[in-house]
Structures are given as C-alpha cells and as structure tokens.
Length: 426
Ligand SMILES: Cc1cc2nc3c(=O)[nH]c(=O)nc-3n(C[C@H](O)[C@H](O)[C@H](O)COP(=O)(O)OP(=O)(O)OC[C@H]3O[C@@H](n4cnc5c(N)ncnc54)[C@H](O)[C@@H]3O)c2cc1C
Ligand SMILES: *[C@@H]1O[C@H](CO)[C@@H](O)[C@H](O)[C@H]1NC(C)=O
Ligand SMILES: *[C@@H]1O[C@H](CO)[C@@H](O)[C@H](O)[C@H]1NC(C)=O
Image 1 (cartoon, protein in one colour):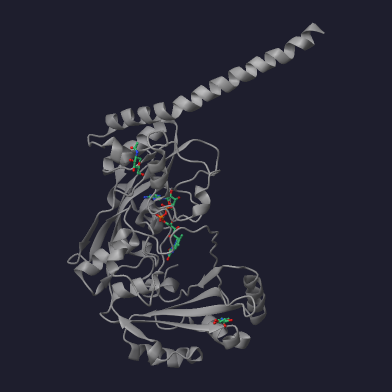
Image 2 (cartoon, helix red, strand yellow; image 1 turned 30 degrees about the vertical axis):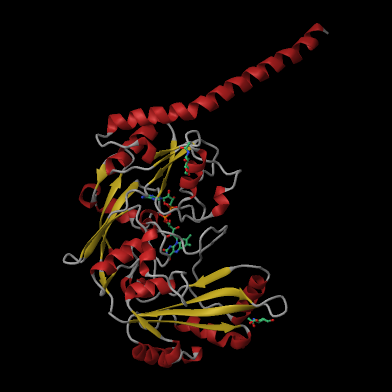
C-alpha cells in the first residue's frame, strides 16, 4: 500500500524536474546558441558583421524578426503560427560570412536553411518540415550585379532577383537579354539551381544552360569556382536543385541577343468561345513547333459569377520580332486563335518583362519597380504542382480537367510550351 502511495508522488516530482530542465534548456539555448554562433563566426572571418544589421531573433525584437522572416516568404501557408520558426536569421554581408556560417552550423550541430528569393513552393528556405531547431541564412544582402556587355556576360549574386538582373541588363543595353524565369521576384540563388525556364527558353534554353561559371561554398566551407569544383560538380549544380551541393554565392551567365522590338499579346477565350476545344487542341499540336521566337502560353482561370461561371483561357504570347512578322507566323501556324493586328503591342525587352510578370498591363508601373524586389502578387497562400505532358491531352481529358477546375473558387493553371532549344538539350 505504502509503495503505491509513494510512486505517484515520485513521478509527480520527476515530471516537474523534467519540465523544469526542459524549460531551462529551451530558454537559454537559443541565446547561447546565437552567442556561440557569433563567436564561431568571428573565429572564421576577418570581415566585420554589425549585429543589428545581420542578426534577427525573436528575443531581441519580435516584430522586426517577423518582418525579416516574412520579407521574401512567398507562400504564406508556411508563416502561420503553428509553423516552426528559426532560432535566428543571419544575413551575411560578405561571402566569407557564408563560408563561416557553414563551418559554424556544422560545429554547433544546428540545421541551416538557405534563402535567396524565398519562392520555394513548400517554403523550404524559411520553414522546417522536421521537428528540429534551425536557423536561416538569408542571402538578401548579397545582391550585386555586374553586367559586362563587352564580355557578353553578367556576374550576379544569389540574393538578387531576376527582375533586378533584367533591369540592370536593360540599363546597359536594349538588345541584350538573359534567359531566366518570368516572375520578377524569383531569387537567382535557388532559381537557377533548378534550371530556370522562361520566355527565351525556346530560342536559348534555360538559365542553367547559359551558366558560364559559378561560385559555391561547399559542405566544408570552401569557396569554389568552376575550375576548382571541376566539371562534374559544375554539371550537377545546374539543375540538381537548391540546397543539394552547397550554397551558391553567384552565377556568371551568358547574355543573349534580343531584338529592339518585341511583340506581346493576350487573347482570351471562354468555354463558350472554344466549344469543342478546337483552339486549345490546336495549341497542343503546334505550340512547341512554331518558330522559336514565339513563346505562347495558356493561362486557365475561373471567370464569371455563380450564374455564368466559366473558365477563361488566355493565350499570352511574346514574340521576338515585330507585329507584321508575328501575324505571318500566326496566320500560317495557328489561325484558329484569330489573332489580329490590334491585339499586338510592340515594345522593348524590359517592357515585355513587365507585361508578362503579373503587374498591371493596362497601367504598368515603370520598370524601376523591378528593383524593389517585391512580388507582384503580394501575400498569397498556395499549393502548386508542375507536370509534363508529352502527348496532347484528348478532348475527353480536357472535358474532365475543366469539370474539376470549375469545382474550385480560385485556381490558376499555366500551360507552357517547350520545343525549340529545349528539344535540342538531351
Ligand atoms: C510565383 C512563382 C513563380 C515562379 N516562376 C518560375 C518561372 O517562371 N520559371 C522557373 O523556372 N521557375 C519558377 N518558379 C519556381 C522557382 O524557380 C523555384 O521555386 C526556385 O527554387 C525559387 O528560388 P528562390 O531563390 O526564389 O527560392 P528560395 O525559397 O530562397 O530557395 C529555393 C530552394 O533553394 C535553396 N536555396 C536558396 N538559395 C540557395 C543558394 N544560394 N544556394 C543553394 N541553395 C539555395 C533553398 O534552401 C530552397 O531549398 C516560380 C515559383 C513561384 C512561387
Ligand atoms: C523593433 O523593430 C521595429 C521595426 O519592425 C522598430 O520600429 C522598433 O523600434 C524596434 N524596437 C526596438 C525595441 O528596438
Ligand atoms: C457574367 O455575368 C456578369 C453580369 O452578370 C458579367 O459582368 C460578366 O462579364 C459575365 N462573365 C462572363 C465570363 O461571361
């Protein structure tokens, strides 16, 4: 009897003790972790890092910490209260700080997540999907861009956005471009590690196909360029995806020629206007076979209200040439769309970037907005998936797809054609 009376008391005490020790560990660990990390950084770099500009913790200033955490996080789903938050965010201001971060997180046994532009679909650069403490190494202060028209190339640091890259090129030349993604707030660091496709890919391939050199910090904190890393690793980092082989500090990318005059257009068809999917089926047959100068996507959105809910299919095109030549291509290869001269808008390359990137097309802001690194769609909660279709989807499949699509209140689907240069890369 005595024993049974005693044992609950003991377990009660040990529960308290456990709780207490857990509490102490938790409350002191993050501060001392940061202190240890800072001390370790000092031992591994000679370049100063002012703490108030480089370290952000919930303890030192909670609202500033959240502001920095949110700053480039594109998917709001991974910022909700229940989502794990980093112990702290470190913003290196020098390349050696990135090297030191690797050495120090290894030494202290803390997981690190690297963030360039924060556009990972599943928030991998700013949330942890396993229950373990982590820190964020945010590269947003490493965003230098050096355009060299003579050399036909650009060195761009990982924390810059593609919008900034495009703007800096257009500042120097109206007839040079760079093949990368369509969305201006994408971060150069994560984006190109996955390939980076965009409106110039049918003519010039992916950004990864146009990479000439790179600087990367490996798992031992060593800084490597193309020569030092060797051709196998150089091959692997151009498509092997973010966080796989080290931290990219910068890419050297080939510039490509773009004409002074490009033509853009948007032609929208509702389900009624494309009964029997004649236009959509034809697009599937020709979009990857038309001239490489033409990049013609289809955007599917929900339109109308409850009584007339429908799917709007917007054919959004960018053509490397004037509207006369575009009309010839379309009349010959895709007359079903009914493109007319008055749909065509001529502009230069940087204006065409603005047109395709989600900013208002009726009253577009000046291209300088690309330097603000802001996402045109702002704060959104989303789930996104990508897939490849190698054969045209038959009418029956299209009907089923549209039926499913109409069950949603808000949805977006984008069809992007490959072909051209994309067929030539095995
Ligand atoms: C709205 C939107 C539009 C998009 N449009 C396009 C498009 O037009 N074309 C296209 O090809 N893709 C597009 N994508 C996909 C995009 O290319 C990838 O999500 C890409 O990984 C984003 O890079 P980031 O630096 O912005 O993202 P981050 O979230 O910062 O990083 C993505 C991943 O790479 C890792 N990483 C980040 N920086 C580095 C680094 N310097 N070195 C090594 N690893 C790093 C991160 O840890 C994470 O795992 C789009 C995505 C979104 C959300
Ligand atoms: C915390 O950061 C905010 C900016 O988000 C700033 O306005 C405020 O003054 C800071 N508070 C302290 C105590 O430093
Ligand atoms: C749906 O009807 C509303 C008016 O009831 C109209 O303004 C809108 O343009 C219609 N949408 C479509 C896609 O037909």
